[in-house]
Amino acid sequence: MNASDAASSRFGRLRTAMDESPPLLWSFVYFFCLLSGYYVLRPVREAMAASSDIEAVFPPAMIAFFADRGVALNEFTLQVIFSLVFVIMLLLQPVYGWLVSRFPRRVFLPVIYLFFIATLLLFYAMFDSGIAGRGLAFILWITVFNLFAVAVFWSFMADVFTNAEARRYYGYIGAAGTVGAFLGPALTKALVERVGIANMMLVSAFLFSVCVVCIFKLRTWAVAREAARKQVSGEIPMGGEVLAGLKLIAREPLLRWLAVMVVMGVGVGTLLYNEQNAIARTMFSSAEARASYFATLDLAVNSLTLVVQLLVTRALLSRYGIAPALLIPGCAIILGFSILSASPLPLMVAIVQVVTRASEFSLAKPARETIYTRVGREWRYKAGAAIDTVIYRGGDLTFVWLHKLLSAFGSSVVFGAGLLVASGMTFAAWRLLREEARLPSERATPAPAANAP
Image 1 (cartoon, rainbow, N blue to C red):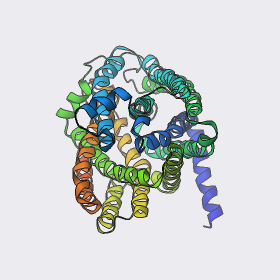
Image 2: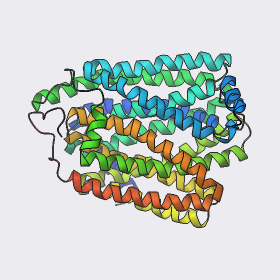
Image 3: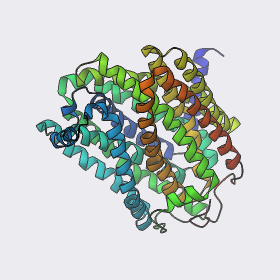
């Protein structure tokens, strides 16, 4: 089969999938706009986090507070940011748990996105007027937004699609998101130095507004699917404790290994992220130049992700299950860190970061999310969100401080530690697969109790 025939065949499979499952189109639009809106802003966040001008990130009062205590805040920029993000996640977890426990899906899903849209408009005003401390506030906001918004998206997809459908379609849905993630940094790269950072907030706000429309459209299919399978409707508040997610993670082996895998994956990403920020800080002097550099990295990540999603992900998940999609990224990261520990060149750091992030987005993430189609609502909306927010940022916090310690001994030591972390991630994936094999092939009918898979 030549390239033209192969492309026609792949397009034909996609068209057939859309004919079989009408909600796919709205899922594509939803994830496309979500990631496009986020990636418009991500290079701005990276540029600020890597800034050598501390006054562009932190408010004057905070700088003075640390200076009075003999601490040079510019030496701990990322450590302070990640610590604050973790504290915010801890505070928001019971708020999120209360929201999803007390309100039906048709209420809490739009409310989450409308809140983020409103705050984006506030940031537009802050950046347009040059308010001090806007950099830190924005970095914290977008970091929280990314985890909650994407976690909620995949939880909702598990309401719309069965496990069999997820294995067939999640690669396509991920590809739609990747196209959006490709467009986002492209827009930033083309526009940010012309129109300024403030106006990029308005672009993202519009894209997130489209996500709200998609939620209302997809809700119809979620309700119909739950009714057909005689499962408890997501239109009924799920009840339960606001901290049920964290309790489930502590109690259930599958969720524990999933959390360990996520933490180890965060570890390798955080070590790379810190090294990349150090490189950007020395290479570029302005926020706009750093934003353009990080946009270029995002374009490379998303290009590779899209290729894998279109050519590999669907075939792996539908034919062989989630095992290859979980284990291949670990092996690739182990290889990359082995190379970096021997030769930590800046170009090689960028290449390994691209491969690491692309393998996570195109293979590991869709594979993990298919597991949630086979468990109950509290597992999906509470435990899944807890793993993707509090547990995720706890891993960030741990490894950002670990990097600070290890970086004193040089990049080779950092990447040597990363090699051990990548090995731990791969072991956790193997243990997760053993627990996943015990789940039913589809979510039980009638629906299980709220605290059962």
